[in-house]
Length: 391
Image 1: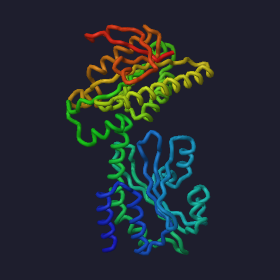
Image 2: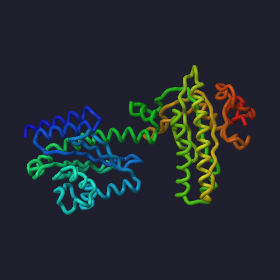
Image 3: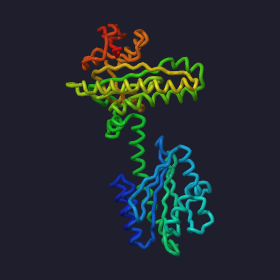
Image 4: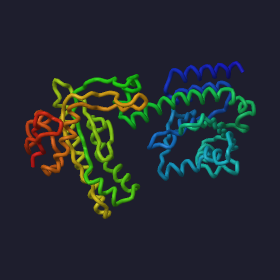
């Protein structure tokens, strides 16, 4: 009992000091072997809230290093889950399962058990521990595969209940922290989520920064809403935002928000030398236009409507921080430069060009642009010189 209590203390300490579940699993497996468990393999499986992942399994084996297996939401991921011991327990309302290998009548139904039997495993234990309701982190699965003619003893199985609650709690702490960081990044962007997690959560808190601005607006979306089902509209919108958003992120920009059929992105710049950020912004804009055109070519081949995009580029000082109501904040960029970019977008149809840039933005380029006119922007005192890509 003393050794198990020491294991519990070790798990709690690691759960507070590391964010690596693999490190904890490796330490637990090694200590269980020292306690006489005939281990071949141990694993921890948890669901995720990641939009691209259904669940993650971290596994330790006696003959190899820690491995991580991700189950997706696609058909392959669904089939992998359906043919798993965890699925069997959940489908039957069970918290614990034991399979004797290789003769158990249910072994053949699960690819994992067949693989373990081929490696010499004679016993497989799986224990599920539920978490409080309220999130997709429903619980954790802990499994042990053992060897030898008898596998695990009844005492070894009973002793799982001594240390598994601590292990489940450590996994929950790590997973909850990771979910907070990963999902905040999905909804607000990597740079912004870092600021929020560091404690910048007070309304009005932020800073003035210099940045290149990219504003993209999908055209004729109102008429599409009137003529097509909402499900089609959402799918098309996501397809175009994916095409436009990828080059923005690849070139170091951050999408701050989606506004209906528009998106706003910034590329933080050095105020003394913003040329580098402006060049990255133009690169992203060109690639976004090309990617959007490729989506439309596929769409036309499928006899579906094309959706064009207008893009505006500007550079200037913005306030980057928390704006909103006391209990509902938005971490975004506002200011004169953002307003000017929004006004410039209205000129795309006027001059019949799909990519426009301000004089301030174009000043950082030697060539590649041509002036299309000087225009008064609503709410802006001075007329603006507007440029388009040279033909």
